[in-house]
Amino acid sequence: MSAMAVVYEVKDPVTAHAGGTAGGGAEVTVVRVHAAPVAPGRPGVPGPRTFCGRDTFAMRAAPRQPAGQPGPAWYDAEYADRVCPACDDAVGTG
Image (cartoon, rainbow, N blue to C red; front, top):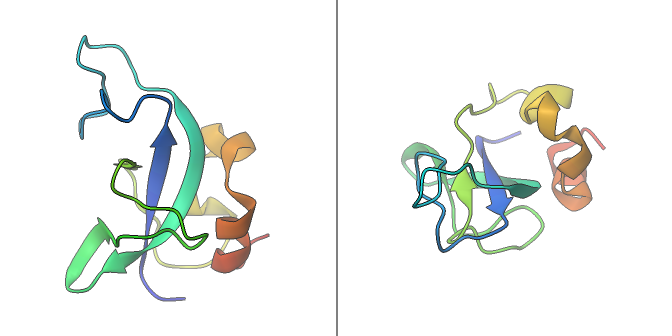
């Protein structure tokens, strides 16, 4: 498995900031958790597309990135019900 980044598809990508809060200080709502290959030469920075083919531009990078090992811990357990099945299959844990 090559290096990967975890990204969150959020409910309102326009108000989502890198810090994880919306413009008014409210938390963003994570709709789906995706995995993406990292950008070349930029560890931890997601490339332009997730493993399932979605654009990462409007997604938010997860605060904790995986250790680079395949396994069930590539995403935060609190979002287990929102993991993209195609990304999970690509990572090799599905």
